[in-house]
Image 1 (spheres, one colour):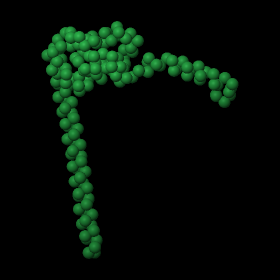
Image 2: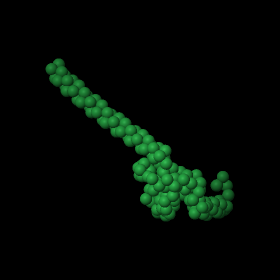
Image 3: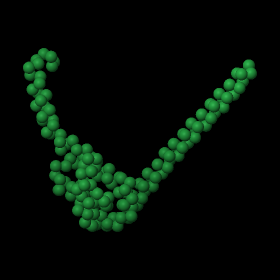
Image 4: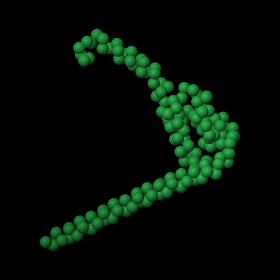
Amino acid sequence: MKSMNTSLTPQPPVAETATAAAAPAPAAQTPRSLLKQLQSQFPAFRDFLPLSIGIDKQLLAVMPELDRKTMRTALGIHTGSLRYLKVMEKAKVRYDLDGKPGAEVTDTHRAHATQVLQERYKKEAERKKAEREAKAAEEAARVHADKLNQLAAKFSKKG
């Protein structure tokens, strides 16, 4: 279709490109880039402090242009991070965006952080064990192949 009318072909892509360049700027923010922005902007994120319940509403009040899905994903990445869970495991108080203390951290939330950490450590230990076993099996197979090759060489010389 482009080859049929060459005089009009350059104009629509230029207009689309200008619109596309202007429109996705706020929407193009990834959860990770948003998280970096939140960490640079708010002490509670930067210091991995336990976040107050409803922090998403506080964020939307301060930054109404935020995409909710991106924000929730960024919050999930942050609250699921090893550093956050380690802090949460021992925390007594939650903090708002400015780093001001608020409500207490419940035993249930501390226990949940501990449980998630234990599951992660267990999964990591299992992965490392499987990796070691695979290396050992690979080494055993190599040694076995070497021995077979030596035997084959030994008997092929005599024959």
